[in-house]
Amino acid sequence: MMAKQTVYVNEFTDGMLDPNKEMEYVVKDGGYIVANTTPGCWGPMITPALKGGHEVTKPVFVEGAEVGDAIAIYIKSIEITSIVSASGNDKPMEGRFVGDPFVAGKCPSCGTMNPETFIEGIGQEAIRCKNCNEDITPFVFTHAYTMAFNDKKSVGVTLNKKAAEKVARDGRTYMNTPEHSIQNPVVTFAPHDLVGAIARVRPFLGQLGTTPARPLPDSHNAGDFGQFLIDAPHDYGVTKEQLEDRTDGHLDISRVRAGAVLICPVKVPGGGVYLGDMHAMQGDGEIAGHTTDVSGIVNLQANVIKGLALDGPILLPLTEDLPYTAKPFSEEEKQEAIRLSKEWGVGELEESYPVSFVGSGADLNEATENGMERAANLFGVTVPEIMNRATITGSIEIGRHPGMVTVTFLAPKNYLEATGLLELVKGQYA
Image 1 (cartoon, rainbow, N blue to C red):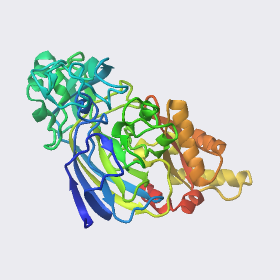
Image 2 (image 1 turned 30 degrees about the vertical axis):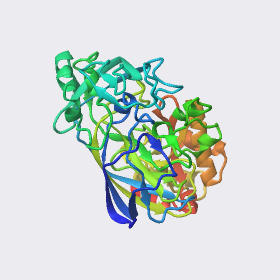
Image 3 (image 1 turned 120 degrees about the horizontal axis):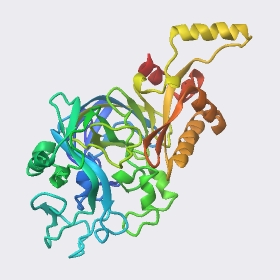
Image 4 (image 1 turned 90 degrees about the horizontal axis):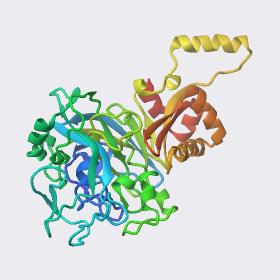
């Protein structure tokens, strides 16, 4: 297929990221990807025909991207299109899945795996098996809310029972679900445990990345969620070693928002850029397990970086999203440092720039170790050096509890120059 300067993506996977499937969309190096994304976690979680816990866009082949390269993804804009959403803490329903409720939904009555469903009424028993009419949702809420957004998409307010039930009867309209999406709208459950709470809106992408080197469920393309796949009893189980083929595209890092740059590994020809799971807001950790999933329009630019072999993503956040200790130095600070260095006889001072290495693992400790190892391996230095730099010129920040972090620090100019990242990083923080 001929590469295009701009591709418009409005079709979605069945929840699986499969490198063996031919990519239907092809974009030029430096071209744009415009996508209408579906809501993330909860809609797919109550739609057992989806096998990945999310419903992400079909991957895009980036012309010129080869295994061992990287792709810099510039997030140009993110716009929420949902009017209302719903979310909350989850509880898996025993007997309605095999090993993993995100991946292997099973009808408790007729035994059909990943069955098609239909909606009958509203509430947490409204999702029904097409084969036998059984209540089939693999998850229910423990505590949850329905949230409406203002026209400017700047604030949200949680709704009472009457308003939530009004939304539930026309869920796809209120959530503005894309036409090719098959997920059941989560507002159908009409949750209203939290009423009258106000929340600031700041949208970001929970899923953004490249296709893993082996078939993985989309929500499990990460070191923490991927643990569920190790020796799993369903068709998508992997070994611990095979999980290393992931690309950590399921980030849930709130700093992956408009204006940021995400540099992703290429582990299959063309990279296979995909996205989804847009969230209206989230504090560090996504501590409830889920946040307000919304539909939206996203504009990305994809640039190939030849020969930059990465294991996982590198994030260049907006300056305002950086830890205080990792922000670029002002001219006044630089002059003070020069005076101090002369006073103590220190030679040339480092010129440095912020970088955030994504790390993931079974828990936050393992994720932190993973992020530091990725940084040390790329720059050819020791992990203790990264520890020191992250301590005095950066921070460890939680993306998702239990095991997704960013290891942020000021990297010396010569480190970035040697890896070919200098101009890209300078451009972000000029």
